[in-house]
Image 1 (cartoon, rainbow, N blue to C red):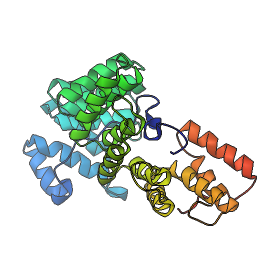
Image 2 (image 1 turned 90 degrees about the horizontal axis):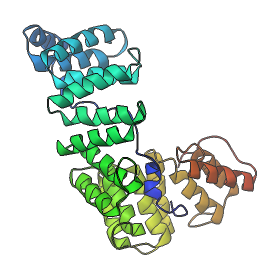
Image 3 (image 1 turned 90 degrees about the vertical axis):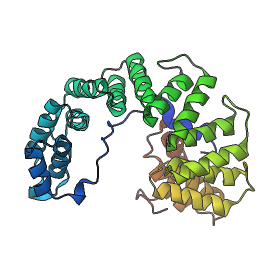
Image 4 (image 1 turned 120 degrees about the vertical axis):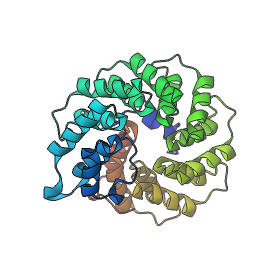
Length: 317
């Protein structure tokens, strides 16, 4: 955001963690469960994972976790990496099976051993989030990156940027971030914009920053939407335009970037392109206070206390 420095990188205060990624499927809903069942019983290895997911993705009484796990285990025994990853995800998540990070890790490592880059990436996530071993995590992310996984490339870039699991090195961070962006990572593309905005590892260039933000928006990044808004708000790389800034902040908020509510709150508090409204500002600050970014959440709480009042209802941007 405009007041917090490396806004788009705020989420990278530590290596970004999250749920393991799911293996890509080949349009499972285009094939009936009956046909998948026929193929699976005939020994079609690729049908095992699709059939399992037909059980997991079904609604109501048609959802059958036990059947899904049974077919995933058959696929694992047959050496199918999609089954290894999806069964690992069930153990890692713990919603449908008893949570077991060690079992998940074993399955991800098995998938990686067969050359699956996604298995290597997920192994890195387990080491990062459950084992708290950042050196091992980055080692697995490197392996994922070598297999072409954009998430692995992005994680390695963050490791160099933050000096966690790798030496702090802005040149390496930029190089890996470019690699991830070229592979299609929206997060990496947005963060390259931040690098240019702040002059991290590259010469500061607000026009180039905005170019990367817009590309990240095209790739679906809500954070990048807010960064385009900040560019218009502050006149960085483009002529300042509060109305345009507000539109981008609204878009970011509506697409899940909670921190954009803070910027909207400031605009209503200061009357920038909108009629000044302390009540509306507080309403927006209350939404921003739910941000995962501790600095943004605290700034929002401070703003609420300063303005003393307002609705606690999450606003519609």
